[in-house]
Amino acid sequence: MRTGENLQQSGEGGAVERIRARLFALQDEPYRRFSAKLTPTLDIGRVIGVRTPALRTLAKELRGTPDAAQFLAALPHAYYEENNLHGFLIEGIRDYDACVAALNVFLPYVDNWATCDMTSPRALGKNPRALRTQIELWMASEREFTVRFGVGMLLRWFLDAYFDPDDLEAVAALRSEAYYVNMMIAWYFATALAKQWDATLPCIEARWLAPWVHNKAIQKALESRRISPERKSQLRGLKISARKLS
Image (cartoon, rainbow, N blue to C red):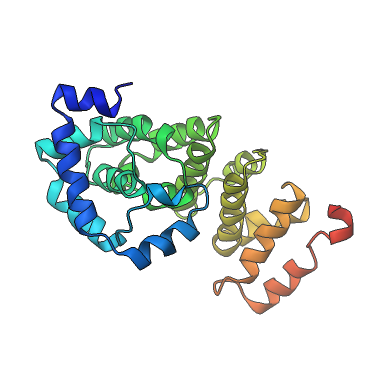
């Protein structure tokens, strides 16, 4: 892997430095402090403080340029916003295979929930069959945010027309000590309860999930406006008591 010094020597650093200068020109110091609080896995020194709409505008401007190509090749990035910009540039890739290839290069460097969740390319929806197989690979990763990304893509693309009840079992089978993986599993099941109630409720009743994840999924479902009061009442009765959790 080439370091920043190597990049400077190879000439690619010029593009990186130009883009970084533009990011710092967009810096919002109060927003920097706010972003740092939301991403506790990052040191504040790695946060510039650029609002997401501005990042998306910059990504749109850069797409297809030589600077963008050099920037995408310049991993790892130094700053949080550079990673977010990288994800937004991937979102501009329209070909499914090229998009997945770019994601597979990038995901090992994702180190926070926000970059993970904001990266959501539309090109993935062009090949649902291949995407399901790719999601299985992401979910089998040993990297926290690659697993989270895989579950997130299952949530986005496979809880509606392409829903398969076997997906519930696959997600429930995940066991992790990683907080951000477990939060995504809970979010997935809460959304599944909203969209696929009849298939998902038996999983909750049978307590397929780890106890903490089980209760967090119910909590998130109770917060949803898409679930009726009657169903919420039923879910409240399925929570695992604090005594049993200890």
